[in-house]
Image (cartoon, rainbow, N blue to C red):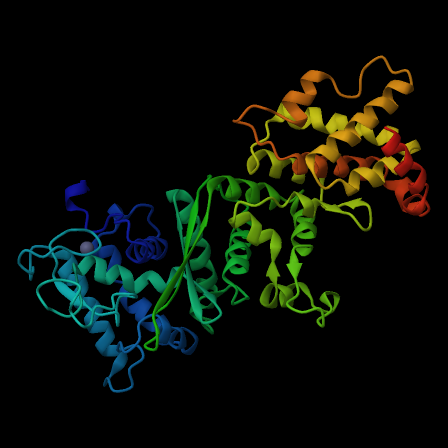
Length: 459
Ligand SMILES: [Zn+2]
């Protein structure tokens, strides 16, 4: 089939493109261009049947309100809806027929064949007709796009009362999402349809990550390319259509992919678990299980990832003096998201290990490093550690000048230079190396602080 004959092709409109993706999943083909009218025809009654299952039908109030799917005033609702979709299919297969003169489809730019209200197209709330000069209510579409949008609900997830539609920048990643969604629906299609995939929370950010993590975990057998993701959270209720956008850059997706690999999944869960913030102190976080917390609490790890803020502090537990997760996970984060290169990470790791050896016998150094609140203090502590190392007669300095300017405090504007990131990394290594000793030693936290304070002043 040549491109000229193709009825469907990618449009850039998230609702239309998701609909096409779901048509691909149902028809078992790979490209929109492979969707022929013969391939789509049997999908239409199958879709209509599914949408009249109670669980799906209920959801339609927030997607296609007042349509024959939900409007009790419509007679023979199922047949009416089926006839309408068949009509749109015939328009799609005859794109030259019934065209509206000088009017292009809102989604794909082909000649328009009909107008849609938001009854059949979320957010197309131009019922006053003032969005365009012809004073005709609704937005112009071609039959192919109108039909495609009817398949869109199969590819969205429930987020409380809203629906989540992810748009991946990579087409294979998008395909994997659609396949995954369809697999969930297929399982229940003939028995007891359950409606769209449920994210398990009404919180947009939590839902975004929960869905991506599930997709990665349950599609582990597939190649998952790097991709950025835009999440559209929408409702199309009569009372108030609304859309909220979240954006996840490629580097964070690449990191989450690594975090969800079988060897790091557990470590990632530990880090995520520490990100939950109860609304009030009254709720003891320990009482809630994972599913409850996803539902009820803000997660700082997820929030910070989307806000381009560091999550490094979540990899160490100050109070318990232990590292959280796994060095390979922390390294993946610093590399993929914070942009530290392999050589710098390796240099800082070995520096952390060397510092741990000094702290093994000088615990107060650890206490002071933990307490550093700005770059000057941090540098001061490194200086003291370097002096300690020199005093033991080691031939190699603790930190060479090159390491200091390239790895600890880089002056290269291309490099990520937050000193706090370095502090968390060094502490992570110290906690890991000294794990056994820190478990059994409780005295050092309250030790000889006074003496050290005097020493600080004297210099
Ligand atoms: Zn179109």
